[in-house]
Length: 538
Image 1 (cartoon, rainbow, N blue to C red):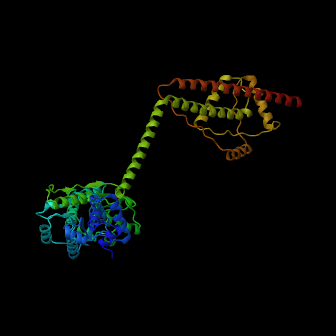
Image 2 (image 1 turned 45 degrees about the vertical axis):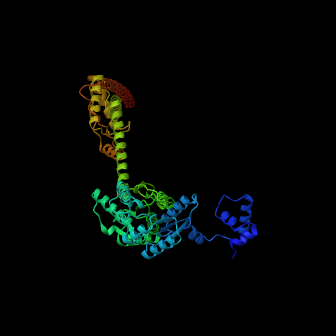
Image 3 (image 1 turned 180 degrees about the vertical axis):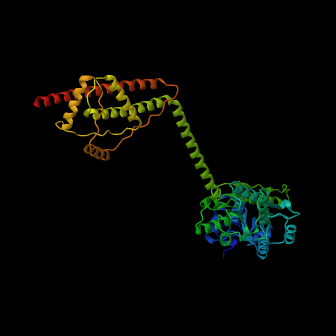
């Protein structure tokens, strides 16, 4: 192994010059510096930091003890410390305690043996008495995530109680009342304060605290997953609990993985909220709602405070680091509340649509009452006219076998009677088919001729024979009888439309009467001609 003398010999400089170059002194020429660095590189020589620390009683190192560097929370703390001391030319030494008193004690002792210039300790397993012993012997030691009575100015911690209150209030604000809590199994200040915040917030909103919904696990992915399995074994999701608050984001990640494995959706079925606001929380799907724990700011502040204490400078008054709620996508209203909300919206939409439709119909009805009345009147008049025309035609057909008449008034009277009967209950007339050359026709013609000479009398229709009745019955069975549509009675005060309808009815009746008279006159002439023919033959 090369020594400092070997480097001086190869660079052709003195040992003192090599020492100054390697210690970063500026009292060396550029040519000598480059020669020493080249020789060091070729020989692979490095200074003995331990020897230098013994001589100078300063190793230019900063030590930090954390529970487990693989935990993203402590990884962020270590990174923040290293960033803070890098520009100062210090080196960071890291020890791990794993929440074990023996491991924490050994890690602290190792860092002290390296003559570290600053010391940041996260030791939650050691007792207060043992920590006080260390604090008294190492005046530049600073504690993080723990408050030691009597040494508050050398302790830094976030407001765990307030942070958990914010997390539970976020769940309650979304409508959750059945909230489970997964806590750390370590009996440390953080877990105690967060549990107290959970209980006090439930009491604040009149929610009964159920100790069976509180579970403990190691603050890791595996711990969150195991706690989730126990929770699902003991309780039914959605029915027994709708949300879960976790001690840390890491435990929340383990919980989410287990819920996904059991085909539970987040946040549709179960809402989850974490604590710490680590970078991990951004990467989860859905993004995890959480509480910001300023671990980066806390670590940097601890480094500066430790260096100030090492140099004998006064430090600021202790204070708890502020926390903040970070709302993302893992918290939503419980499923039952969402369903009720959707039902209410649909009912409101349906009722508003029905009201709008009814209003529109009412307005349309009010806007066109006259048009509707006129249309109904016209329809009724048309039906009445049609019924009267049918009745008139029936009367004309029935009177083809009767004697002619010379009295127009009698015809009109008969027409009015037929129209009235047709309007009340129209019945098809019984029609007999009698040959013109039959004896009955000749007899009827003689009677009509003799009576016509004496006085103009309206002859009554001759009763139908048995054959005629049989034919009429057959026709009645095969021909459907149509009833006239009843006409609605007009109101007391007639309108202009009603008057017009009455005039139209009168005109139609007059025309029908004229048509009947014409047809009866033709029948009379035909009967007279038949009589004369019969006499001439005789």
